[in-house]
Image (cartoon, rainbow, N blue to C red; front, side, top):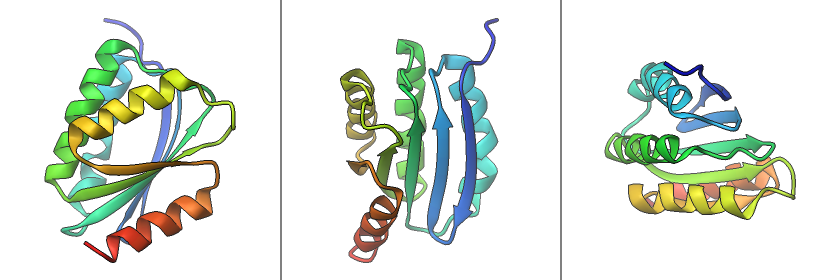
Length: 131
């Protein structure tokens, strides 16, 4: 078994799931991460959103991307309908954006990329108000 690569911190802020993450990420990390946040997701209201801040160039291995797609589909089924993704550095890679686009498109979660945390939170909250 491979060592887990990646870091994350998850918290609930009302009807928002706040995720801070730093990669690169492998399959073991994504599996552990999904298991760890289940208790937080279980406490979320019927409809909720998430704000994900990505630090550094957080690439996913192909296996990790596949697992994250399934996890986000599960979140969608549990009420997550929107995600604001914040890149802490303007130089986030085209590859990372492409991976996250495929993840959210697969899951059917509306999303938008940001460089500012406050704008991302405002966008998610405004869109939740219209659901």
